[in-house]
Length: 129
Image 1 (cartoon, one colour):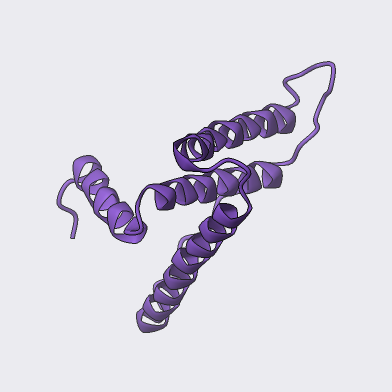
Image 2 (cartoon, one colour; image 1 turned 90 degrees about the vertical axis):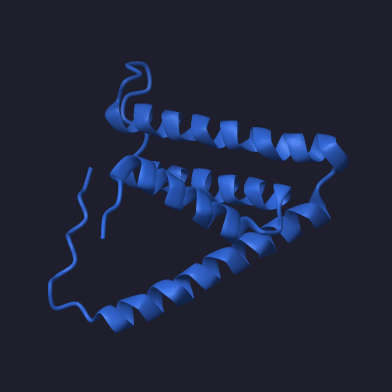
């Protein structure tokens, strides 16, 4: 596994803030686009289609487990079949699938997620300035 380097002290915070805002807008627009594409191309609609979209998350989590097992060579019959980059990609798939599932439940995905993240952060880290 690799660790990411901490940002340097001389990082331009205005540039970082602008980049973060643009990336965030791109993220939420991409989630909207993916959800719309899935809605247009899904064979099953209604409540059943919604439930199947939620179940997709379990499939993706299983792929993370498979990649970790493959990266560590835990299956002696198969040996090392994945890399840690494969694990990273599978984790990204989990995040994307979860956000698409959330978007399926509410058009206010960004606000719901942001509020929930703030609650989790407060609960876990307390008041950190």
